[in-house]
Image 1 (tube, helix red, strand yellow):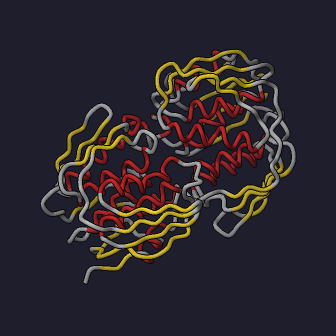
Image 2 (cartoon, one colour):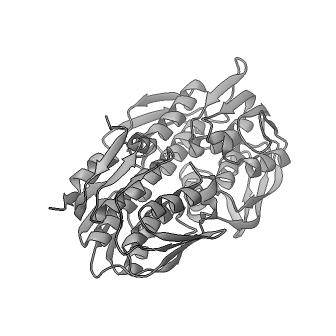
Image 3 (tube, rainbow, N blue to C red):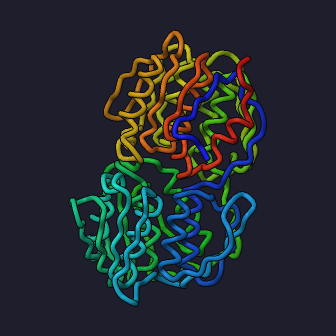
Length: 434
C-alpha cells in the first residue's frame, strides 16, 4: 500500500533489467477484438491495471466469456460472440472510469450492436471530448446522445446496428476516435469508408489497430494515407493465441533514468519489432547524447556524456513526450517538445500540469499551442509534485529525484491506472545517492 505522499530520495544511478508489464493500448484492443471474434482466444501477459479491469468488467457485463488472470505470468481466455455485442435483456449501463481505451472503442462497437447503452465515467472522463467520434457514428446512421454536455460523456446509444456508408472526421484531437471506428466498421451491414479531414495525431496507434485487425482476420484497404475502406460485413476470427508486448510508455521512464544518470537499463518485452510508437523513444534519448541499442523484443540505453537539449516532434509518442519534458531538467540548454497539443485532453490537462510542476522544480517553461519548451534550472529544487490523479505525472516526475534533492510524489497510488508496481520497480532499478 502506497502512502498518500511518497518521498523519493536522490537517485545516483539507474541500473538493471526490467521485464515490462503488458501494453495498455494493446491489452484493451486485443480483449475487445477477442470478444467480437468467432472462437476462443488465449491472451497472455494482459496488463493488470485499472484500465484493463474496466474493459474486462464491461465485457463480462455484456455477456462475454472471460476466464483466467491478467499479469506478466498469467493467461486469459476470451470466448468471442462471433459478431456485434448487444443488450438483449434491456437497457445496460457501463461505468468506464477514466479509461479512454475502453470508452472510445466501446462507444463505436456497441453502436454496431443492438440495445440501449449508457456509458459514463469519472468526472474527468466527462471533461474529455468525444465529439469527433460521435460525429463519425452519426454519419453512419447511429443515434447517440450526450446526457450532460454535447460532445462529451456520459452517452446514451440507441443501437440498431451500423448501416455502413461514409464518414469524414477530424483526427487532430485523438487517434482513438479513428481506431474505434475502424474496429466497429467490419460489423456494419455494408461497406464503410472513413476519411480524416485534417491531420492524424498519434499515427502509430492507428497502425497498431490495423495490425491487430489483420491478426483477427479482417482486411482494411488504405488507398490514401488518410482514407480507409472496409468491406462489411466481415467476421473477426480468433487467431488462437496472442502475446501482449510490453508497454513502451512504461519503458520510457527507466530508459530516460539511465540516460540522465549515466547508468545502463535494459527493458524486455518490446523492441524494434514493436507496434508501439513509444518504442522509438530511445532514439530521442540518443539524440540527447545517450547510447541506444535495439533488439526485436528488447531495448537498452546507456548514459554517456551529459544530455544536450533538443528540439523534437513527438507527435507519434505523446505519452513518452512527458518523460522527455522531465528529462529536459537535466539537459544542457533548452528542450522543445512539439506535437503535444492533445496533452490538454488526456487524464488531466497535461500541458498545464507539466508546466506547473516543472516550475516548482526551478525550470522556466514556455507553453505554445502544440509545444512546450523547458529551460532547465542551474540546480533542481526539492518539491512536492501534484499528480492530478494522472498516472503519467507520477511516473514521469519521479525522474526529478535524479537531482540532488528529495522529491515528494503526491497520490502515488494513481499509477495503478497502468503500472501498479511502478514504484517497486523504481526501487529495484535505482541506486540511491550516498
